[in-house]
Amino acid sequence: MRRWGRELAVNALAWGVGLIWIIPFIGILMSALRPQSELIHGWWQFSSFTISLDNFLKAWNHPTAPIGQGIRNSLVVVIPATVLPIFIGAMAAYALLRFPFPLRDPLFLTIVLLMAIPQQMVAVPLFRFLRDLGLINNYLGLILVHTAWALPWVILFLRNYFSTLPPEIEEAASLDGASRFQIFTRIVLPLSLPGLASAAALQLTWAWNDFFMALILIYDPDMLVATQRIPLLRGQYHIDWGVLTAASILTMSVPILVFALLQRYYIRGLIGWTLK
Amino acid sequence: MRAWRWWKRIGRWGSFLGFTAPALLLILFFIILPALQTIALSFTDRQGAFVGLRNFVQVLSDPDTFNLPGFPPGPPPWGSIVHNAVWILLHLPLTVGLGLILAVLLDRARGATFLKSIIFLGMVTPMIVGGVIIRFLFDENAGIVTAILRAVGLTELGRSWTAYPETALPALILGSVWLWVGFSMILYSAGLATIPRDYYEAAAVDGAGPLQQFWYITIPSLRPVTMVIVAMTVLWELKIFDIVYTATLGGPGGATMVLALQMYFYAFRALEFHRAATVATLLTLFTLIVGLWFVRTTRSPE
Image (cartoon, rainbow over all chains, first blue to last red; front, side, top):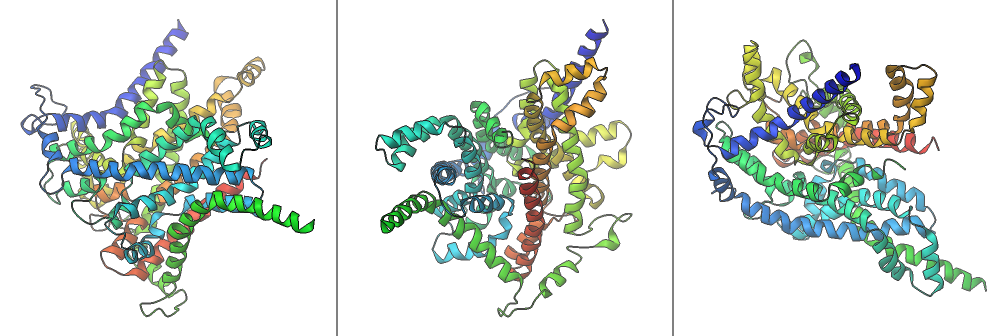
């Protein structure tokens, strides 16, 4: 009997916490889905309840900061900004694990340490460098920046992942005359698909959620990515919560979709490098 | 014979360089060189003359950075470094502690996978949206937090938190706890799963109660995970930017200004590149201390 009571208490507490944690998301969903007239006394009043997609349409086609265009722009940036760092990072991670080279381990540690640096540390020189190359207001510039900044983590994660593969297979292929690059593309990469999926899920989310790099490198109003448009939708004094929350939901839908579909890989990517 | 051995070595190094060159070049041109240029900017003036530590003295004596006369009991602004420090002081114990409690609690509850996904949602959300949600929660008319506070009689706390210097920073810090707890919870959950069951059985045989087991087995076993969580969380708190940008833009009156945002305003609004570079260098100094501590502690025990 006492045991039953304890189990009930634990479950009630856990679900209570879960409820508190989801309330803000329910709040923005209610604010985005229901007309302003119903929300005067708060979204938690349900005396009348109408659902309309008006706010979503308004946010999607907003006159000054259309979120629809932002989402298309974000996709154009994020897909190459995920594929490139994973391929380039996987090559480097493999070499840093398996190939002999003097100072290999200090080099690896230095790369890992770069994860600590804030983006603000490179902002001004990077802006000038890309301006001189004509890569401001240019997605190639932003994609290269995302790629470079993703590399330290991708290299750390994939090096640890590759270290779990048995080296015997690679040695056997090497005796059969396969080159290092062939071993890498035909054996190591196919064996590492779960690890690559984890890295892709996380990098896609990070690149999508990035704000600062886009803020300093993309100015053209038609080229702004989704996250850049959210602050533009928030007026200084008056806030149209309906449109702003609808735009927020649209912007967060992509990383949430990635999380929902690739949850297992996502979580493994986050914890994979911390626990041996 | 010797020449052949050299060729072989060059061939080996060659494949190392071939595999790593794209990554190393990108890192060099987009991270390392610009970071070094920022250091150079922080030690020079507009004419490019070396000025020693003058920029640092200027930034550190600026009320934007340090406004200690305002520090408790006075309301913010206390300066960006103090705001970042307060953020760490409140957010770190709250997220680490709550994350551990939630991991242990959910380990024993039904529907744990679902509940964990809900709590983790904040980590998946773009932080720029996180800032919108925080402002929404603490808004006088639209916010549920302020409505609840009014309902329980705390009418003074029933106004928009982000509009007043006394409450803006607490609102952002509380909101960032809500967003970030998923991180420590997920890592602690994974850590809990690696503790062997027989530790607890042996302790139970020796007569240890649940609290003693938690204190003497769970917490020490989770030490490596705690290190990771603490390092990553402090780095996040130091680099905080997006949340503040959408929720308050550092306001009202600088009451939520943080180092990363201060750097952005100096560089891209005031066009004072040397001052901006100095703030960035200071911020990087702090993050590198955390990074070096982390690399040292995680590598030494083995």
